[in-house]
Image (tube, rainbow, N blue to C red; front, side, top):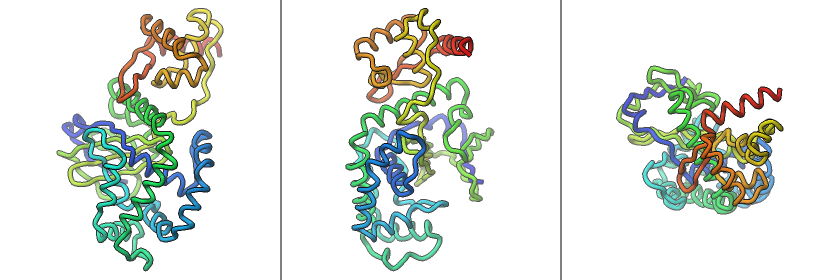
Length: 324
């Protein structure tokens, strides 16, 4: 199995980052495989799959490039660049790295992905341009219209995992990353089940990059390593037990509903959408819950996210236990 050996200094310097390019690559993979993880993603796929297929039907070389670059065991390196981890680069700034790939490097990466020689149709110098043009189309047509909402979901996932890290260490923070990824202890991070030699990350930067589509991969270049993973609770709200009448009487029905929803961090905008309450009402309820010590808030990027405290968790758990 593939294992990264991570020393204490690398762990201390690791961080979660948001990458518009990684989100777009994951969206391309969802379109390429036409598979979804949940109903919310199915709505998005149904809205864009026909246009994606029409785009590739009119450009068979790019279609072959996509099929060759994203194989089950290995993705072409030039199409999955490792984020810089610095600042907040725009999609265009990230995409420039793919567009500027040397043609020979692109052909070499594709040969590795294929596990053999390239088809004659791909023996050409403009592969990085073709790949970048397709990713720009995927971004513009299928990701950018949803990006503010998706970014809030990514920020919420990062906040939740940061909290898990503080409470339960890396084993808790990495729980549910991907089926084959888990913290083994003793500085060992399992990234997949393939039989590849272990890698030492001593002195390297380790980045964790969430995406909303249910696709992930590992990448590295020079002294940077990244794990791209599908974030939790995306695009749809999972089934949940409603607040009981007793909790409603204690807090007020509207506040009780908000407290139940805050099992995972959410912004006021998300709470308005989920509850149907007005923004001002949600804000007032959140202030009361904050003053009561049942929730906390933290800025994550451009959003302020609210989440339950241990007291809030205990109150909801006791209530739902009594309801059962």
